[in-house]
Length: 92
Image (cartoon, rainbow, N blue to C red):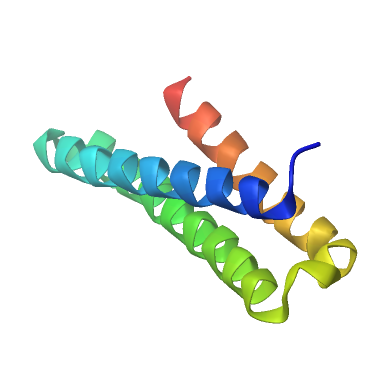
């Protein structure tokens, strides 16, 4: 059985990974030219907002303790899925 702590650890690691990817995308956006740069920056800004939302939901859960997972599950999973889908959309 996977513990809540293990899940939180995995989520923190994935958020850190996505944060590094965001930094790479920002650098690539700076290299893009013209209209492509503007579009790329908008998409990156959206990713940053979703990354922050997922991070905040996870921190909110951690502050309340493990017994509250069911209370926060929907919000954490929703923020997580939005961020994951935004990264997938950016690659296409």
